[in-house]
Length: 260
Image (cartoon, rainbow, N blue to C red):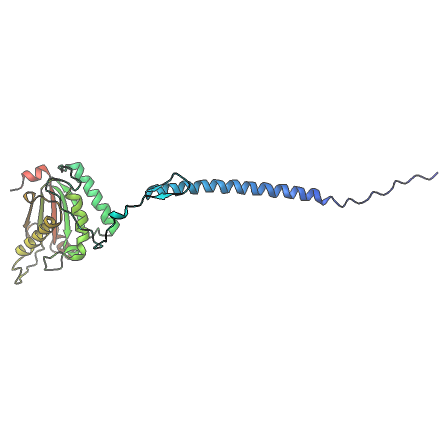
């Protein structure tokens, strides 16, 4: 007796749908992850934008940032790129506060602030600072502020002087400008000796501070020492260069009592 044969099964042509469904599921999962990452980045970007807007005075509330615009009636034509320095009455800062006297702690803060500015401007070789019993001494070296044998301040040195003076004149300590030279004699019609040259440089610095800054004339003076108070050996070019300077001295209490 012959066995009964089972009918052949028809080939299933829809098996690809299973693989396709798995692929679609995985693809969906990928897009969900990408979307979540994108939302996270967007949140970080918004936080950064809000921080920038706050730094520039822009409002962060509302759907769109609003800039704090200066009223139109307050806008005027800028006459010059160089800011004009306004002089306030002696004994007060520009904000109207009564000046205080700087002590040793203030000297250190002023010294650090000026040194940081010098580093930023690449002008460390033009100015040196020192705190002594007399007070804070800011040495303006000849190469950065005066031409050789001349007493007029170089125009390109004004910005540096302004920054230094702006910090120092916020206090009511007496100021002294002291001119120094090296031991090489000078003999010109304008400066017969180093005495005249050193004194003229100090005096020109004094006049500049009085004209442009809030300085009490009763608390500022100028003098010249020629080559007789060196801080380095005049036997070398480097030493002579260090000696050619104008010292701006912010006197301490002890330093003021030691002055004539």
